[in-house]
Length: 443
Ligand code: NOJ
Image (tube, rainbow, N blue to C red; front, side, top):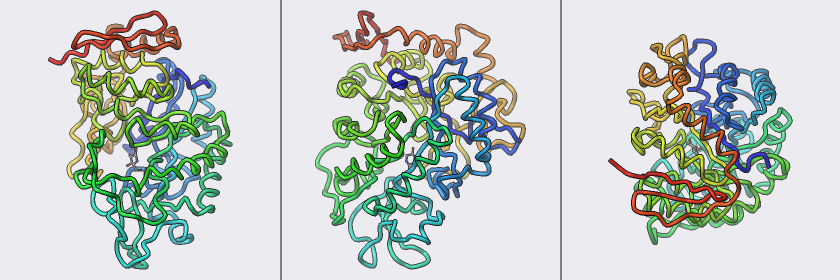
């Protein structure tokens, strides 16, 4: 269980390092930066999707699960990346998107029965898509209505069909054979839906995670989070083998995580990610998650506001200390270690769900494109002169060095964890006799 106290670094491949000047990050670029990851001291990295994709959802709409998007490289480059990572003792996690494919995946035409279709000529129920609107759209070719939990370009696979289970197991085996050490499993609470397609009931209480206005009006008990999803995940576990790390994106309250943890290793702690920078709120999010023993602590990713923008630049150090001293596995999103804030995004926006601001390129040096590309970057750099890896590496008092020291010193923290009563504005806990106190004061 190499991952127990591991630090996993999330790479958004399009925005990490471009090696060929086309303005889009790529696998060779990541190879060039492996020494940086070793220096920082992380144990593993997770690659957001690298597969061919029409980019309706920037890679989360996959049109071929067993290849690399030509803009990011080739399978050979993936092999070099694995070799380079493993030589340095770094583990590699891929992003697996089992809930839906791209509408342009060949499966959608070749195997329509692998997808979920309405039995009537229109939406059969009130299910909503996570990005807004109905979760049902008509197929422009056949006119039949299909289910999509996210964008209409992402039709949901039918995991009740054994052929789908087998196909996805083959995908998992393919990447394991090529050296992947595990997977981050996308949207797995949406994996299986009610077989009777019943309406979701009106919301009975407040869902603790952000939802689109329309989605917030319903309790999504039939459109997702079904007990049958656990069986589907068991099939993925079987294909991945017991030693692969499986970390699940379950967009649900903490109290729902336990059953997922029967089959996968970790679940992202979303209530913690969304907790405002307030000692009492953080504590309330941490306590039940820590009690599960196996959550992945995370404070930002490519979907939500960056850490520096959410907690404020003045709080990035205590936030990093919190993230990296909680018990168990911690995930860092690329750029948080240099304090990268949200950027302006693109005009007009590229992502329809307004997530461009969190996806600006990594800033390696103070040059105009931050050392990310020699070409025209797909999203502009934010402030490479003010914030970049090179300058911070030269300065032992920088945020980057602070992260590095935290990563190094967490090795000696031990197993035990106990939250302590603390005065307002402070969050204290004990780790094997050592007291950690985080200042959660707001300016
Ligand atoms: C979660 C991913 O993190 C997000 O980027 C994506 O849009 C949805 N799942 C749908 O795949």
